[in-house]
Each structure stands twice: as structure tokens, then as C-alpha cells.
Image: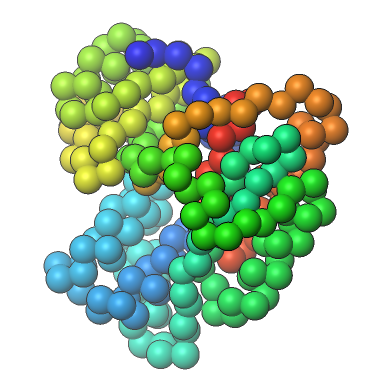
Length: 241
């Protein structure tokens, strides 16, 4: 079960800066705003908000920041985000799913469409690529100091209920069924492992390999531009890079 991570270049995980982590929380905050609007500010009765709090903690967001965020979005009725998913193809036929939260649907749709067009792709209709993906849970653990025994981690993950395990150069990705994500994460944390992140992921059923250098360059630029957009929450693709 151990092998190279196909759907995500996990080496990028090693290069997270404090600024990038701050941006991650900004995006989680938007998801919280949507969840609070739809289900209220009490995590005991709002399962979506409860999951987002767990997600924030899994990304090492301090409790004080989480509480301030909940108070902010509970008190300000003018903050009104909606979640939108865009689908399309990047260069070379790479399938791409873009999840966003926005207070201006036209702005975000126009921006995402322009990114696809600029970098040799095209945005499609809802459902045009999502059938190629399955929703899973994903836990990432990074071992920069080479202290983790891969076999022991894999055994612990599978015992905790993980469905798959992949390792590459000190970066480990543990896949779960979508409803088992936080239970598996908590079990691994209890055994002394420190996840870098725990989140849902859209995992592709098939992959595309790019051989043309221009396609590779354009695909990298497309992903970079989408990641830099404040309205974009998540980007999933089936590029085997």
C-alpha cells in the first residue's frame, strides 16, 4: 500500500511558511462563516462547524483564533459567503475541481474562468469532471527529522481505520473514508504522531501524465494562480506529477 502520492505533490507540504498557514486559516474562516450562517454558531448542534473547528486545530490554528473567528462571523450579519464548486480541464486534459467561498459570485467565476483560459485549459459545466473523483479523508504527517518508522506508522494507521497509506521522502499521506477522518486522526495523535493536516480530499480514480514541457509549465501556473486566489478554498486534480 505504500508508494508515491499520485494526486498531490506532497513535497510542497514541507515548504509551508507561516504566511501560507495564515492563509489556510483565512480560508477555513470563510468555510466557518458559511457553516454559521446555515447552522448557527454552536458546534454542539452544528456538525459542519464542529468539523471545521477540528480541521483548524489539525492545521495548528490556536484556540483563541478559532474562538475570535466564530464570534466575528456570529456577530456580523453583513458577512455573507456562499460555497461554489467549479470544474474544468487544465492543459493536456488534466481534470480540475475548484472549491471556493465568495461574497461575489460573478467576481469569483470570472477569475476562475480566466485562470483556466490563460493557462491553456477550459472551465466546464457542473459534473464535467467530478465523476472522476471520490471524496475521502486525508491526513498528512511530515517527518523532516527522519524519526518515524514507516512500517509502524502504516500499521497504526490501518489499525485506526485508514483505508490507504502512501509515503514518499518523509511525507506520509493516510487516506480514510470521509466519515472516519477525525477518528483516525485522533487515534494517531493518541499514539504520539503529530499530523500536519487533516482534511477531506477529492481523490481521482484515474491519472493524467504530462510529457510536454509547455503543458507542465502551464499546469503549474494554473495551480499556483488558483492557490493564490483568496476566494479559492481547495483545488483537486488528477495530474500525476
